[in-house]
Image (cartoon, rainbow, N blue to C red; front, side, top):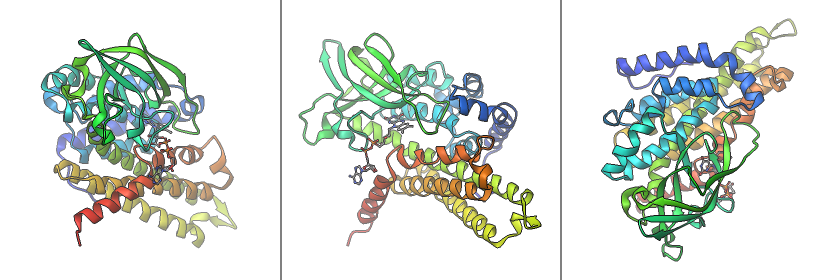
Length: 387
Ligand SMILES: Cc1cc2nc3c(=O)[nH]c(=O)nc-3n(C[C@H](O)[C@H](O)[C@H](O)COP(=O)(O)OP(=O)(O)OC[C@H]3O[C@@H](n4cnc5c(N)ncnc54)[C@H](O)[C@@H]3O)c2cc1C
């Protein structure tokens, strides 16, 4: 289903076109097998690297494609329509890059961004710990200054790309007694090495193929030069700056998945016959398709609006929160409706519907749960409209 949206440059249209061809040729035929085997898509990752997708939103001056958020969401939506897991491999990496681009020093940007953009170094974001995800200020991973280094101890969990990635934007406490708590938080660009190990791969309901892992830091020594911004106390701000783009990305993934569920249903409903006619001619199915299409369109408009706000440099946590909340719920609802429309086949592993149903709920949880998004929206609403 097409949606009217802001015009794109010829170059951006060509990128989207190339991605569409790649998805049809090299991804779509292999998704069922890789997803069911929970196998890391090594070849597809190499192709994404070749296409420059690990530098999608990294500025051109650092070797990236320099895509606007408005174009990036269309890229993510297109990929998520075929296999949502692939978007996580790029997105956590690009959030790490956004943290460096927005809060790193010139020399940190010059050192890391070109290597992130080429995909030579790949990784993600390490915030969550076994005892806390939403309440990030409660983290316990600790960095203690020791000469020209810091020594880090702690555990991070649920880290996307944790096994395959080699570098992570790592949120730590540098002053656990700080009040307010965020002033004692810092972020490091942490590359794997002695003291930084993966303890286990985490098994999941969906979001297969991409690795989610627990990371252990035991007397991990890191140069002070890797402290983002070279100043302690700005870690929470760095994490939040990356999460704005992350939430818009989740919204785009939700749109992609909601669209796949709808389009599979539109096709199936015209083929499957009951009582002498295609189910697409039964009014009960019309009601479902009508609701699914409207939900998708609303999710897209919110997502494109959030991306536009991000591109204009406006504060956009309310817009990103609305888009993430609505589009992820749309994905969950469309996946379930697609399963009802497909009847028993929706429950079969020979179709994609059961995967949409397993993948969709993650988007209500990741990058800040939907409970938290509604709180962000309400707080912004009040702040922007003083009595
Ligand atoms: C597949 C997967 C991939 C992930 N990838 C990453 C990653 O790459 N990097 C990373 O750092 N993390 C990652 N995460 C972690 C994810 O960000 C957290 O799971 C998420 O932020 C929620 O934290 P939590 O699981 O600790 O839930 P909790 O914070 O324990 O929340 C539990 C419930 O309480 C609700 N709640 C909490 N506080 C409030 C409140 N104040 N008011 C109302 N309700 C509240 C929540 O909304 C939720 O419903 C990933 C998680 C999954 C499942």
